[in-house]
Length: 340
Image (tube, rainbow, N blue to C red):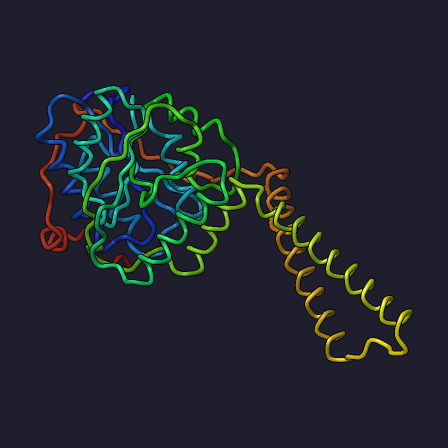
């Protein structure tokens, strides 16, 4: 394979994926070995893993000439790691896929077929999602429907980051410098001809999810606040509603005092009104704070990620292509043994 301008770049972000990494690589090799029409490169992005992911990536890079590895200086997060892979990609199209094998690598070939038919963005649509809890499924459905209600940009339902991007789409994505990134939303925003490819999502092959509840909530907030000003309009509406209620209360109090011999009674009502107004104010301050915090992060202009080391593609002449090695074989050869 030429080490120069491969047609297809496959970006695989990795964070503590030692249990699945070798199987993932073998599946990738099998997919492209039977597909002789295109050259390719596999770009692994090590997002500050604390397990043996880096050691395995170095082995894969030394063993397979089509492998590139981007080592980030620390854990910058999934969206930043994917962006690092897009920056490193040199192909005419780039495929984003996670290492956990929930998104089957074999679907990549179907994406390539759609790309060849003229689509610049081919995104995966999860027709079924094996191995995921009912809470995860319901929260995902709620997220997509909520963000589409609030946002000016429609994100396809039940889609993730698993997608193929034409070189023009990749360049458009890289031209967007924001720090709080939702790549699936950015991919919708850039336009181009897009196609939703349905597929069955598998259960995670090994390990645990890298998106616990806290990260899911942060991703949802990034999506809402990065693609919508509706929360600001909601704050304005709540402020107007609160002011209207206050004006109505004042008017009622004056009417009762002037035209009747009674005062407006109700210490409890007064306290409840104060608490309600305070709650609305705190909510509004929180929404404004989310936007101000994002502005603060953007104006600092810090890099989205820092590359500690780049392991480039080896020329085919330097190192012969090796067959995928099972994990038990690697263990015997010392690759999987702990280093002292």
